[in-house]
Amino acid sequence: MRVLRGAGPPVAFAALVVAAWALLTAVTGIPESSLPTPGQVAAALWDDRAVLADNAWVTIGEILVGYAAAIAVGLSLAIVIHASRAVERAVYPWLVVSQMVPIVAIAPIFVIWTGFDLRPKVMVIALVAFFPLAVSTIDGLKAADPELLRLLRTLGAGRVTRFRIAQWPAALPSVFSGLKVAAALSVIGAVFAEWVGSGEGLGYLVLTYNNQVATADMFAVIVVLGAIGIALYGLVLLAERLVLPWYHDERRAL
Image (cartoon, rainbow, N blue to C red):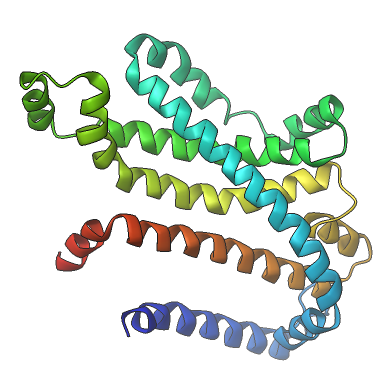
């Protein structure tokens, strides 16, 4: 019942948006090439279901591998930066700079380096998604209770023990916040990567339908991409509820 109550408002809002969309297309008579009706998008989803499914599995595979790489890089980098003030001063500014270069400018370089296989796509997704996870983890590690840290030092606990008992548990809510943002960005990164060099995938389908001015089919691809992003976000949210039940209990109490 709690899940149903939580899903009710967003589902109702989505229904309201679709109704307004249908009303807009009916009243204004906007051509399908500019804005298809919800019915036309639904028809495209059904008619293209085989093509969408085949290419969706390709994109899902890229997203999962790139997301896993982003988690490995983001968490490792955050822990290393937190462990050394000198490393933080040297590396953190470049961590920020890495997000200031447009990904569409870097992606072709990855293709030149590695070719048109899975590797450049994973690199693009990881580059897009690791930053929020790394920053959130760094901030979370700094949020450990200083009184608990002083107590552990007094009891002779070493750095690893303090990290395991105090810092990492305190950082977990921030880690999962970064994971949720990274999940959404992984989908965006996969589309960018497929635009640069790919012959399959949902991003490739978007370019193909754009060249054909098949707007309803483009919207169908967008719907599938949104569903993938929501599913990945939901899996992270489920993992958060399983790993941090106390955190959600406290939030509900507030």
